[in-house]
Length: 468
Image (cartoon, rainbow, N blue to C red; front, side, top):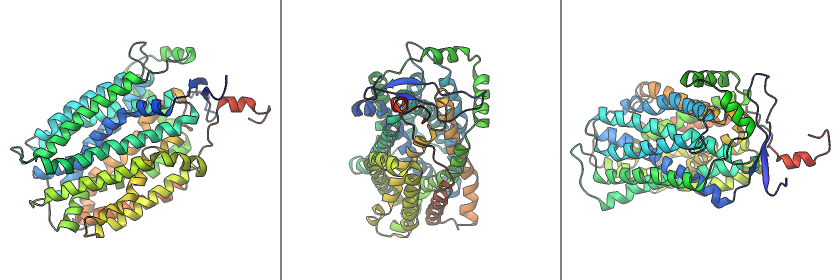
């Protein structure tokens, strides 16, 4: 066994006697092209998410929704994430098929569902049909997401996990960039609108996403085989009995046994993801007000939506440009401090953003959000996989997603009243509020004690006895 050819997953911490332990096993190193192909499916999944960020709320506006109704209309994302991802993660932990693998059946099914929903979404004619399709789209997204993240953790040795998770950030940025830029480009190429008033250039972007969603996931599935479980892992899988009820019990047990530092990350996520929901829901209305001087019922609101797509596309370009440099920074300075710095960049950017009246100047402060978005999609996972046992990657990735969607759920049921009663119904104030919350998230991050970097087993074996 040589360090040049193989690494192994090693125990992060001593678990209680009843907890699941990390299985020590060798995993082959992957080349950078192999890591990129493995993560390519994130491009399609995140294109779908990009359309939700930029185009779903404008569709609600086109259909006659009022600004203070937007949070409750976006309830699908938090609820489905809260219920679907932990269950799917737990079920994928308990699955192995020699033909279909462990994680792949789940993210293939999710990608197909995303593709169908994206194709149908822009043809809605009423708010209730848009809400229904958003629920189905979010169920599909959540079915794909956490098994995919667990697949990366399953497949890579410890020394390559940072590259793997930040490759996800790269494709997250690239997929959302294409989603947003397609809105701007198609506006200049496609005229007309559906009977409900939804422009055909919006329809075009959704159809492109429908193709990307399923095609990129299939490339990843074909190019990257799953590692078969070791004899010990297979024995554990066969020992797990029961279906949905057992999976629910496993989620509850995992929450009860959650490492303390992972609980602290939940506080960071409370402020971080509440802020991001505020930004996504109100950025087009903020741009319309500050730059164009109009509201959602103005004919010029379409220009604001298209320009918002370009701005969001730019911050996602920044995301995929900085994703891999963050690997080196996280290794040199620690993942904790990298994430703190990135959150502060976003906070400063969003505090400046709503005060600008020149649409071209919007591209400067939003760079901070792009840097933070790259970190959000990868850096916390670098820390998290050092805290959790390898046999529970799926369920804990789902629980981490619960830490994301619970703040989103709180935002959907509280922020409409905050906007109306505290912020005066002003979408610019919503963006400022988001900036302040990101600064609080950075402060909360200082409370976390970052786990030590996991060394390769070969390095451990080479150390003198007693030095481990």
